[in-house]
Image (cartoon, rainbow, N blue to C red; front, side):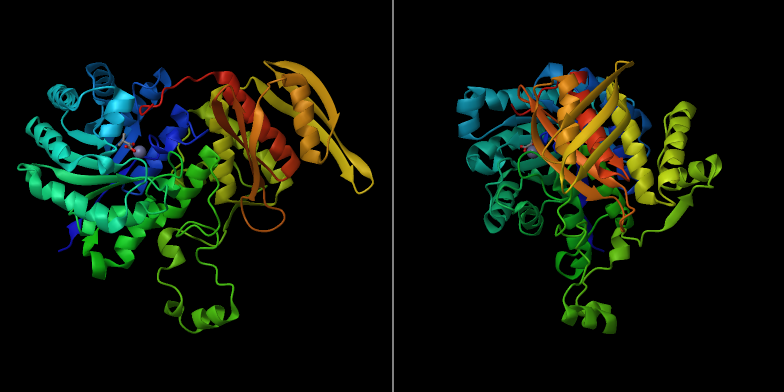
Amino acid sequence: MSDKLIIFDTTMRDGEQSPGASMTREEKLRIARQLERMRVDVIEAGFPAASNGDFEAVRAIANSARESTIAGLCRANDRDISRGIEALKGARSWRIHTFIATSALHMEKKLRMKPEDVLEQARLAVRFARKGAPEVEFSPEDGSRSDPDFLCRVIEAVIAEGACTINIPDTVGYAVPQQFGEFVRTLRERVPNSDKAIWSVHCHNDLGMAVANSLSAVVIGGARQIECTVNGLGERAGNTSLEEIVMAVRTRADFFNLHTDIDATHIVPTSRMVSQITGFVVQPNKAVVGANAFAHASGIHQDGVLKSRDTYEIMRAEDVGWTANKIVLGKLSGRNALKQRLKELGIELESEDAFNKAFLRFKELADKKSEIFDEDLHSLVSEDTVMSYGENWRLLRMSQSSGTDQRPQAKLVLSEAGVERQAESNGDGPVDAVFKAIESLAGSGADLLLYSVNAVTQGTESQGEVTVRLSRAGRIVNGVGADTDIVVASAKAYLSALNKLHSKIERINPQV
Ligand code: KIV
Ligand code: ZN
């Protein structure tokens, strides 16, 4: 019997720390349901002390979770931990995840604390957490750059206080696989009570080695939990990618002799959902979930695959949830058909009113597009949850013209807080004209950091999904919009980003 590798997903906490990736309560609930469907063991739902919004999102996930353990991140102080306990206590199974930095650099420059005080604070935090929580996980932040002697003392102390998972972070993605694996092994060998805890790792991808480092900590170091995110989302270059870990362990079970409980057929739908909600597009050559991950372009490869798939395929696309686009609904489909299909996709809308709105949008889409795919439904529902930011700006109507001999021109009718307003502008291209027209009314002063368009499904009649990233006064937001007309999708995405900027959700980053 192989050992079980615990999959701890932190898409909604570390993933949410990516610029512009912050999610609403509704968006987080959708992701949490999908992670449960995929049978993730532990879901880190957020950082409850970050803001009221984060607290409510963690509480909603805790109250609705059925199978997974729900975790919340807390700095090592009583206030954060009490807030975490309050948010999580409704869950069937839950844990407090508390952390404090232990590297000389972080203690001196960031915390401005002496090592002995850090050790004491870690000990007291775990003691306090253990009084109110059934499980406590402890992370020494910047662990991979910490002095092993000091780290051993901290870890021994927190295990003695009742921490049952010890998570070693490579916070800045500095580790290399062999060394990191040996580092974790050394800690396990030297901490006298190490067998009282499950060992875990949390790696960042700054040098592109997060997955390799995590697996090395498992093979060499004996870790049995990996912290990871869908699509590798996360601070800076991201975290260990969940899909790569799960499929590496499964495809090379001969080498790892481990298993996870993950239902891999949900991997691709989950990847798409996270990408649609956060506006972080998956690169085409990304392992497992990239659009080209199973595409064989060269003639030799195609010939081989046609003769025998295993010549060039080590995994089967359908095993990770790639399906040929299936027409699921059309213009004549009614309310029941939509309800049924949303249910099959695991999409639960909050209320009858939310369903009515989704149905209206579905009808509008079916008028423009004869075949509606699952991907269209996901994107339709994503647009609805985006509205939970509040709709200060809404697109009512628009037209634009462009051509080889004409300067592109756009005319828009928008609603600002319910009041109809008109704008027009020309621009270097149709999208530029639309954005300028919107800004002539909004005057947001935001900088456009990113604009990208992706097809939701195959074929030219596909909806285009546009991501717009705006930045203003240090705050970064992503807006997403979809439509069969990519210029309309661009206007929707820009307005959705403006609505997020307008919503003034203030949250603090746990590590800053
Ligand atoms: O990267 C890191 O160190 C973290 C910890 C808070 C676990 O995210
Ligand atoms: Zn992290």
